[in-house]
Length: 326
Image 1 (cartoon, helix red, strand yellow):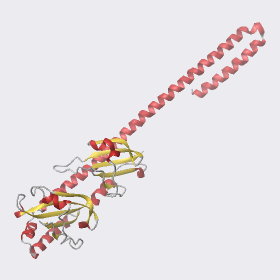
Image 2 (tube, one colour; image 1 turned 180 degrees about the vertical axis):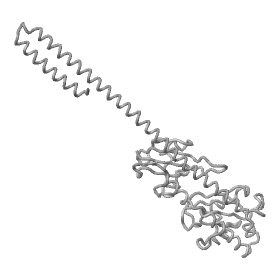
Image 3 (cartoon, helix red, strand yellow; image 1 turned 120 degrees about the vertical axis):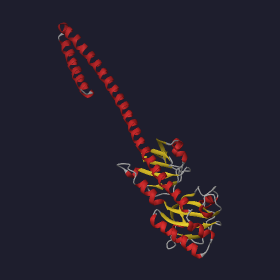
Image 4 (cartoon, one colour; image 1 turned 30 degrees about the vertical axis):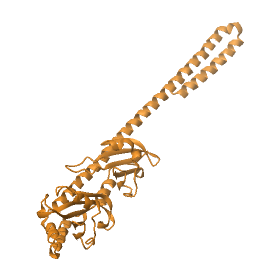
């Protein structure tokens, strides 16, 4: 029975008791006992109404409490799933880019690269370019492969028909400097996601490694081999294919973010164009995996986070986010 039904019965009871008191009054002394019964009926009605009101208030409080519990559970479930998705994304990227770090170290030992840097003749350079072209046919994840001498001048590349990089000086680029300053050919250099002139102005990563005498890792440094990776081909595929199962996809954003907050990959196509304030993400960046409700751009979001887990000897050090507007 609902509260409104109880209230209706009480109203009818009070009306009946009121009429009974009137009739008892008319009956005089004969109706006095009947009047007492009518008064008790009014009192009983009042107590019933109070009990019903108390029950209704308790029920509303219980409903609010249960609603809060359900909401918290829903947040826990959704947040846990978003963080799982975020960690899965960055793990895929780490595993893929580990291979890129291996590629450049392997190809830097190729005899054709060593000969082009030691002999410097037209024939040796042409053969190095041809050799890099063969590699590119098998590894379509790269825009190009370039070979620079010790002064940072590119002397050969594997895709000269699309990229006229020969003759350009790259000594000040991150990929050349980090490789040239590395201890030996067992290490690699790197330049993070950027708009690269080596890729015709497209977004790329560049992995690099010293080329040393006789292809030995501890040989005398001769130059640097750089492999220009198609960043969007990997990153866009991952962030746009994330199975968020969202009924309102426009409210969900999937990103790969640098430690400084620069968006490196974005399901909304704003890579390298926006940054997230690290303060907005709060403590999420401090953990390996987790979720939380944070304010981004003045709006509340449920954010799942995963930090680069690394693969073998490689880790990007980046953060992965799946952000759902609340």
